[in-house]
Image (cartoon, rainbow over all chains, first blue to last red; front, side, top):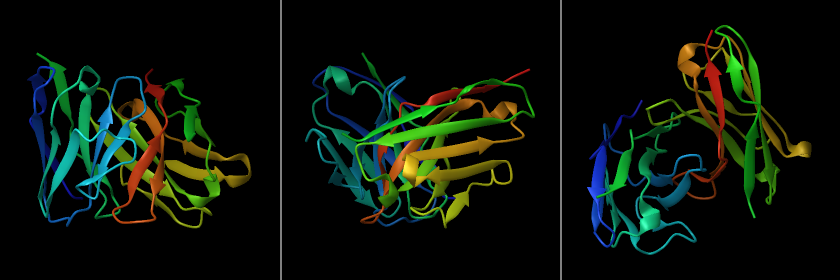
Length: 107
Length: 121
């Protein structure tokens, strides 16, 4: 299975900050990388697919980049509603795998 | 709007069985692959099964193969998960998710809020 490693595992930031989360994969996956936001007790929400494509309805402060084995999710200016856990996920191989998550907390 | 709602979770003893359901609405259910994904306590997300639009193609991760059975009823807009021989490590919140396959990479564009399964004696 393709291993996914996110960093950092947790992050403290303030409203208005720019934050970047990194996802590295154990083998190349081209751009077959998706990002999700998850809040406790809620349905996870697709933010980015194909490494950099913004899902419909997702605010433009979210952006993604990367190719191969290294990817990033950037939030340009944090809002209160962005404090959540973020996961990357690969769909290059049928056993889809997720990163362990990055918990974004208020500083 | 698209809605997925899981049900059927609860407390079950090791070795026991449980059947989860996922009710879909707001879209043509029969047009989409569907998956089950779980989140174990303190850990992240684990995808473990998908089913094709007609049910002709099914895949399981090793962690559940031989114990769990995924199925669907397109007439009832419903997805199911029969879980047998449950273990403590199956304790998790179980999500159903719609898989978009109109373009690569495949991705999960709608999820339910999840149902909690606790395996404990």
